[in-house]
Amino acid sequence: NAGVTQTPKFQVLKTGQSMTLQCAQDMNHEYMSWYRQDPGMGLRLIHYSVGAGITDQGEVPNGYNVSRSTTEDFPLRLLSAAPSQTSVYFCASSPRQASYEQYFGPGTRLTVT
Amino acid sequence: SQQGEEDPQALSIQEGENATMNCSYKTSINNLQWYRQNSGRGLVHLILIRSNEREKHSGRLRVTLDTSKKSSSLLITASRAADTASYFCAHLNFGNEKLTFGTGTRLTIIP
Image (cartoon, rainbow over all chains, first blue to last red):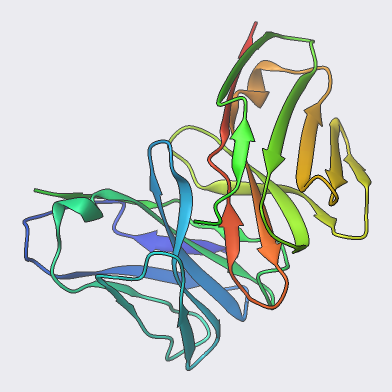
């Protein structure tokens, strides 16, 4: 199993550009989530999904969209990038719910200039 | 914000010593989890303790949970250089599916 994969590893965007961060898992996990990690802030939940077709907002959802059309994939879309979205983004999955241990991807380091 | 807090923010100890880090939270929880993050990598799950448990062990790790004080501690015994990493607690509130992470403790083991 590859586990949780994220692409790209690094990305530089100009303010106002849009892009999609990809996340995929091959463990047939129902629960998937996106976090951003900023220095001194720990991880903050952006969006999460409890199954295909179901998504919900986390703590910091503004500026981001998600969809979950399949169990395997959970892409995160930045609609119009802003410098405040410069961060490291982590995708995670777990078998059924947030109450189970989370499996994290390696992260995407995004810089918005 | 309901983000948890951890202390200390940073901790340096000699190899072989024990390391203790603490985590506090503000709400009623379903469970609390601890994760490790090596520099530049994703987080790795270490241990999960449920709200009705008070202590749990896994190898050199010991976790305690005091729901009356809304706090947890992670003890790493006989530390090794490979334990150098950041450690995060994460709690799950009752009634929702949002895992909330603390701000982390950066642990450095000096050989």
